[in-house]
Amino acid sequence: MSQTLPLDGLSAVVTGAGRGLGRAEALELARLGASVVVNDYGQPGRDGSGEASAAPAEEVAEEIRAAGGRAVAHLGDVSDHEQARALVDLAVGAYGRLDILVNNAGILRDRMVFSMTEDEWDSVIRVHLKGHFNTTHFAASHWRARSKESGSPVYGRIVNTSSEAFLAGSAGQPNYAAAKGGIVGLTTSTALALAKYGVTTNAICPRARTRMTEDVFAGFEKPADGRLDALAPEHVSPLVGYLASPAAAKVNGQLLVVHGGMVAIVERPRVAAKFDSSKETFSFDELDELISPYYADRPANETFAAAEVLGLKRD
Image (cartoon, rainbow, N blue to C red; front, side, top):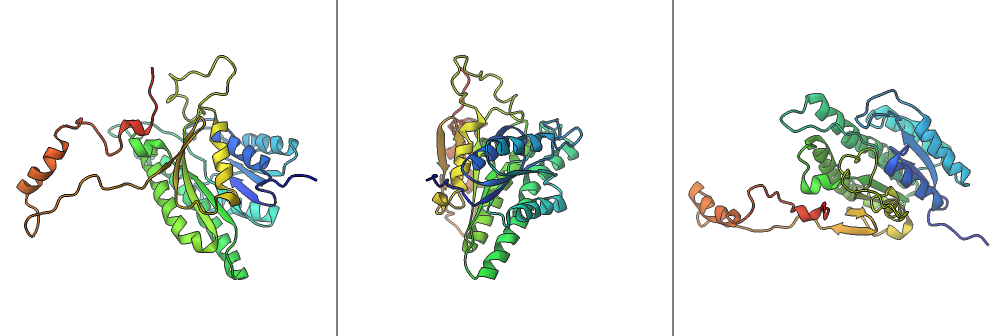
């Protein structure tokens, strides 16, 4: 008798799944039994440049089918509202319903904030943050309609992709860091809104060696002895598979950092210090007396999130 897989009978959409993290996530969901829609816009440049191509998504879909799974490819730009609608419609048409949405698609246009152009800002915000919203909007509408029709909760899972760039800052990526912070806000809001329909929404901050991060990890070489690279996307995809499964029914509105055999659950921000005015309201002098000493012994460039959040240091 064949063993039942965790995602048997479920269908999934994975965006940006033609390469890197998205590819590993699509393969993992299929390995766990899900039928997958592999979405990718297929542009060769990590900045979103070049001609769109169906080849990356088709290749991953064929890889899934060759292994005995079910998959269809979708060439589409998730930052376009109507193309995101078509993506969700494809999943429903191909598999009867949508159960899992993994938002991964993104681009990079790095520049210091004083040099960044309006288009470099807008394009990254559009693909990452608006792209997450677009697919989430249509998936949520699908689940809400099904829940109302049945009169009971349905099965739904959203896994969003944030980044430690939002947690600890990234000087040359103000657009990317802002988009990834926005995705966390979208995640927690969506988690609250969809819980009553049976849908969970979580976000991951993955650390992996991909086309998007080749510069970031330039000083961290792959193992020469054949061991699995600590920065391989295959370290991230099992967590996505878990969050997409029935086993994670009680995990909702959470942010998890994942890489190289490590998963960390991130707490919501906590108050580090609190000051009360001795009068009806604060004066400048009173604020100076209370707050300035608190920061007196701290590094001048320290942000709210310490560098050790990343836990990543070059030798």
